[in-house]
Length: 162
Image (tube, rainbow, N blue to C red; front, side):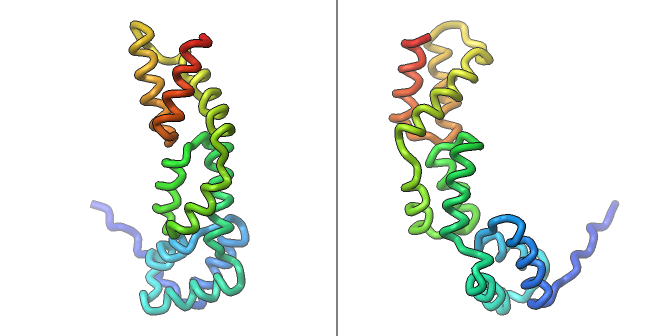
């Protein structure tokens, strides 16, 4: 049986330097930083101090992170608001910041994006009849994190136009 490799613990100063390097390459949330520090063995009492320094120096800004996350996941990932909200919660972003960031999404843009996804998915779906195709497309669209009403509207529109 293999032993798991020992994780080297980092001092708060080492963690600060490492997080500064990471944050300069890609946006990180405060939750990401907390998880990394916990994995690195930084004492719980010292994590808040390191995080405060990162926020003060603007390496970490949850509002900026949330805006970028919403933009990227919506545009490139094809995610809907529900899935984005869950992802941001998982990243440790506050509900207030999540709501502010999600206000960037427009319903019209979401519908058009979802319609394109449904159009790409439909030919790949094995269905015996229209009813089965419709239910599978609805299930697919819901799994992408879109609102139920939006999903129904888009799938109905697709079924009429095809």
